Length: 432
Image 1 (cartoon, helix red, strand yellow):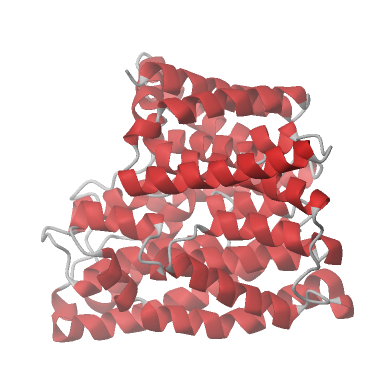
Image 2: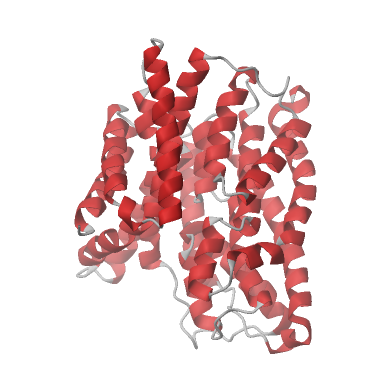
């Protein structure tokens, strides 16, 4: 099987998802196209990952079957397209890699020592918050020469990148949180999440400098320059302005439009004759490479539909009487624990959203809970997508990476409580 059919289906799904912002049936068609692409791409997954995905999908199908047997009609929108906006958003963002800064050697003087650590960690964070995993390659290809990476240098990539989950609307974490809490207030999530990210980055840089020891003076890092910041800031500003002007349009939908539009505009300006060819080549190469996230999000949507059908047949009492700050922090702990044993946060979010629905939790507080848990597991989960990528590219065992980030995980767990308290007071006052 070639990559052309799955790539074409995923590209069509992006277009249909954008159309679905105005005409809802198009989102179902996008979901159907994505499911076909996901099935075709199953063979690209590792055996263990494929087994997990198939198990989750099977559990969802069983739930739907039990519901049908008891007269509960399947929610096809939930089964086919529950996570489609998230999938299409991530696929759309991948095109930004075509115009991302490459940071060629010699463009700027490399920062050294402690300043180099701070600038490099922040550069990974800023770039990774918008262009995702491509940021690791951009920074690593310029400054790192030794494989496997030593502890301190690996921490620069891991800590700088994972903190993006706390606030960035371009991360799957944000898309998932808004999928299961669509009424959440994005400005609050971004503002408070960014504050948590800055605190986490400050803690990380202090720990990274200590990990380097005397060798920190020899470290040559990646310059945090206006050129590196221009693209991420432009995209963030576009999304924020569009959200202010069109508050009824979901942030995921705005990103679906803004990311490809900005990419196409810059390509046409920079290389007009090669723009179309580069877009097609990217679609063929990079969209099928999303098979892991694609399969997990599809199976999570089916599991959610099955779980919802089961709840209609056998209602379950929520595991708590209310959802306030203490309960939100407890949910963070549970999600982090589950991620340590291999449960993806999108699964935890989906199940928690269904179980807590009778309590009508404040959506912004619930969404922030998911963002914090997602960011923690990205750095500290031995089976997280980030750590698996770091293992494959830089030859460092995922369990070793998780162990190196253990103190960071505990620090963020401590900071999570006051963060959730601020969100609760800002979003719902004394009612949370």
